[in-house]
Length: 264
Ligand code: PEP
Ligand code: MN
Image (cartoon, rainbow, N blue to C red; front, side, top):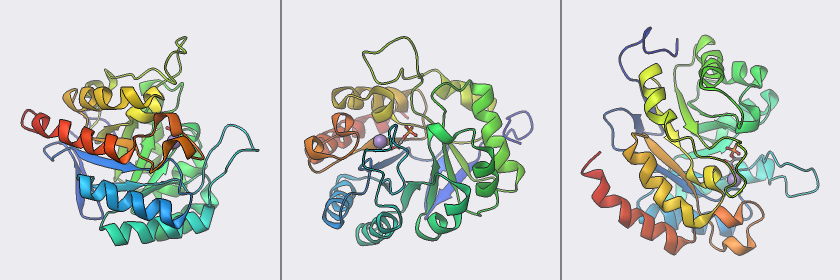
């Protein structure tokens, strides 16, 4: 169901009125790694909207490596994200971690994210296939392209064609960057599948300074959009501060992307 051979025409997925896919202007999804407070998420929503973002991101259920770190505001975070999206006029995307919270997250979000750590949580994928909501499926940190597409297949097989793929870097021997940004999968996925493909240069690199150049690289490689972490005070962020752009940094990136659109 996900393959180009089966479905030659590129798919466009609509998220809260925003069209994502081939032939559409690439979209920018921006926001904090995690929703931390009402003030933080509203400020960020308004700032990224002003700079030209198309969607607002913010984690409420956070898949943290260890159990003693901030785990997200959960349901309260969902409500704050949804409120911020409405105030800024942006559709919202947030991660859903378990099959039993798909209904809850689907009530408040426009796009449901499957994190890298859950790419092969097959019960979650099946439940999302029945949710009726668009899904943003991130590539697992050690997943092959075949496994990535097979994971998407689970969602389509349950009757949900609205899946957007996202390359977020893979684990390699290299430790200078958080992950290794596998840029070539962007054009490769477009050959193999009709589904839209986005890129997440924030998690792919783990370093704020690398986000602008890799955002540009992803768009030039043909990504249908980018996902960028932005925080009002990255040094105080409860997660992923080192890779988060400041408002000024995000404004600058959005300015730098403008001339690129003419070539995309
Ligand atoms: C995130 O988007 O904040 C996140 C946890 O991403 P990933 O699943 O790609 O690590
Ligand atoms: Mn993050």
